[in-house]
Image 1: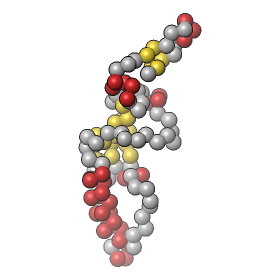
Image 2 (image 1 turned 180 degrees about the horizontal axis):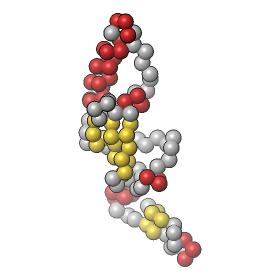
Image 3 (image 1 turned 90 degrees about the vertical axis):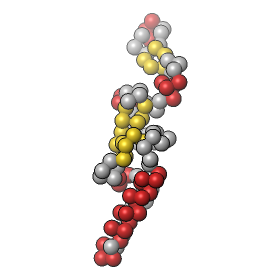
Image 4 (image 1 turned 180 degrees about the vertical axis):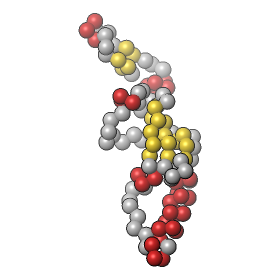
Length: 102
């Protein structure tokens, strides 16, 4: 994996072959591309507000807010307790799907 091209004038690029570096999604925050989809990132922690803390690679962390964990927005019926029921359902799914270490 190419780490740096700062010496490219001399025709030399800094590289790494360590498996942890080659397999990392990103090496630094500078490597993060807004809008890019990062798949199979390990979950570090389930956050109290319903979000998830993930490891993007080599200590670079990202937060996925609760509102972005599911594919579709919900429209529960607040008069029938729909939001409360759905919130409990989403909490169970979040805990099952986004276990720490996965």
